[in-house]
Image (cartoon, one colour):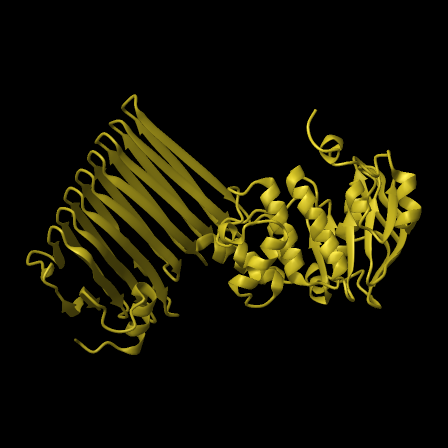
Length: 308
Length: 247
């Protein structure tokens, strides 16, 4: 394994909860190059030859294995676009942990655009965790623009957990999914923006098969002068059920735009959108203060609970 | 001991000054359970909010254990040992019952200790400890959790604002037991309950009647309660149930 420095190790801890070399298959990318890799009998990782990135092939029937593919950037001015493709075999059941940490102490922008594409064969199940984290006190921005594309075959399921709590200046997340009969997509997004950060999250989910379902839920907090946009669109093209939810807290001068988008193209498509945006309720603060917390402590408890 | 003297609270209602509390003076001594009753709109809940520091009085003083707390913040009063159960409990997305009990206790309460507080209010602890304090809980469940958080505070002064509101009859019987237990283990603390339920008034050491923003009467339970029976200040939970069932 290529030697990682202290900052890179710290970023790894933040985005992948990694305190050392992970178990199972992994590929660690640091400053634009592969720093470490391991494969297993069931999971193969191959470097792409036509463009930056990797192909991850998970054999049919693989159970209880994990793949870690964290990315860390500590070089100011580095901009990269990486293509990671996952081929998940029939009835496989795996955990995939991606994540990107950027530490930018310089004055040039550092940017990582990860394009993750998933092909889930019938009956495959993936739990996918993606964390974003930024640090560093340079004037250069930390920019992440992840794209996630999913092709879900019959009765496959995907649980996605997306977390971005700190330090990313600008992010534009795009998630597109196409689901066949009986496929199930569950998305839980947690987001907090500070300062003058901007975060845009766009979902487009096509429910094409009978009995397919999608549940996309975003919980977010916009502080200071930050801006967020949550744009979730579900198309019901078959008897299916879809639900999107945006639940947000605004603080200071934070702004949030929630754009509901439901399109029912089948009489038996049941689609629901919910959105609630508002500041922390005064009575919540008062309640916690009557339990002995200061206003700032109460605020922190409420936000931590909300984003948990 | 809580000493309130000449407390007033005025609000401006469409340009008109309205006195919600008008020169209230009373004392809640240690080792006593005091029930404040009186007709709706008489200023009882405002009194509780002023004691907890949620509202600021327009006149008068509040002293707690010898210290003038009239200008103290909610947090300062809480840390001095004042606990306050809201009439309408607050919901929190993401905060679990256990989290709330831990905040209330001010220490890393272990699960079994937290469960005791829930059992005390008649909730099956294991079903609730990890539940979020959100809209999935019924009004009655929230109310009992609210009371449990005040129990967990082990405060010098515990204030309950209409603890029976929103609680079904079955739970109401348990609630009376909660207050009887609190009274039994009162030690050096004091309890203030705002209620016009006859059964709760019957647990009181002293009763204070507040009407139209003033103290109408106050004194020992045996002296005051007989004068209230049959009025809006001492209501029965459900006559039929108390007499042993339906028609």
